[in-house]
Image (cartoon, rainbow, N blue to C red; front, side):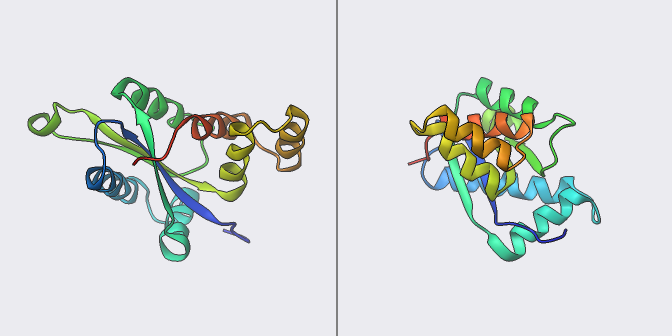
Length: 152
């Protein structure tokens, strides 16, 4: 991974799991990411770089299970260059409910989400997207980030 930029982990969590439970679900999802990616892949490098040098974690209110399933479906796209995973509880605990969907993102994506969530003129947003070579997948993720609030 040449000249890596700042990375953050973003977790879209079930809106009903608040407080410490939100953090626990994000931790479960983080473990799923480490299980999912093999050593030596680009996604593994991103994940390990985040864990070693950044560790910043943002937990967002991802809404209902149906929204988490939709986000998970988006992240499973072959256009997604970033490590991601989801966590679902056991049948006994929460009837196999998805509780957290997480992704490791570079600064240009999470900074771009700020342009999506503010009243910045579209010209400024368009310039940011063009100057940072934002892909259509990244634009989709920027929109998701801009629509979710932090968990409280």
